[in-house]
Image 1 (cartoon, rainbow, N blue to C red):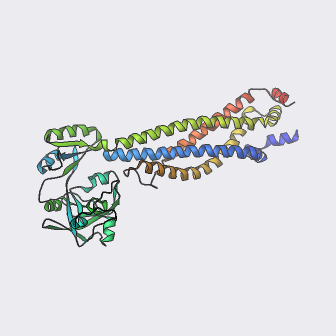
Image 2: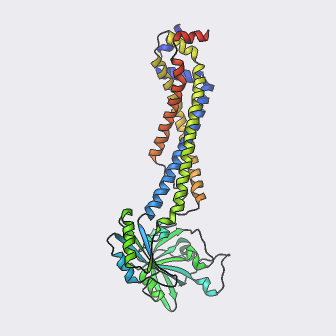
Image 3: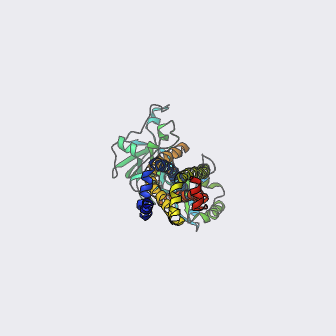
Length: 414
């Protein structure tokens, strides 16, 4: 009985350490199961955080913009009409755009072996987009293209943005000039920024390649095109709530034009993300239920293997609360160690799986691979859920045992 008294006299930490090291196989089994469960919860939290961030990025970029286009491809949008739409009270910024094709002078366009060239002239052409606000162009708002150096074009600024591949091939940098010519008109435009990115549809002609896309100020584009009219106009409104009203007023101002907000451009990708999130939540529910069942079985096995110890401690006067506290202390130690391991494994697997999921969706507007943010709230929620799962299993496994009297437990042994 003296050994029992000495064991009883130990503090909780020493008793927990003694119990865990004396039963290494059972402790390692519980540690392995806890690590696996927590890793799955961390992965769920990481993927959910990534999907939530992707939804926010897409929604913030498309939630409060609309555009005006001519009703047919061979017509243009009148500049004065576009300016009237820009005066709508809900509009806080606008971008007037003019598209065209020109030939760079003293610079070579990017070509590929698969290019379909029917005329030598087509092998030298690039596409220009004249704009009063390059930052509002869908390629930039959807993150398909990103500005890597310099600044965006705005209002009356004279300048050009060129692709990084085009700049590298022609040894161009910010401050240099790019010369464009079309039908006898030549414009020399200073380079204000460099962007990178790829389009899903590569095109067949050099002018259709994103590497040969040049953003210019609107005046240069109008001069090259021999017209003041526009190809399109884009508008940013104060908030998403006022978008429908702004679109309605724009339709009243320009009934002969096509007015559309671009929220429908990403409806399919948002629906896909929502579906993935629902599947992940279903998997989480299954993981939690399976974890509770498995941990309960392991803890029952763990507790029954110590029934003699429990009976003796109860017989010498140790309270049930103190014994339960020792159990809590033991599983807490294992939980802390399992949390450290699951954090390393979970974050590594989360990065890989998140990249795979977003790349599989095939939409370049989503966050780029390797840039998936992990919200601390999601992480804490994962470990909080893990604690709940563990203690539910612990309660289920211990309640039947501790409802019995010390005599009943000892009689079971005999």
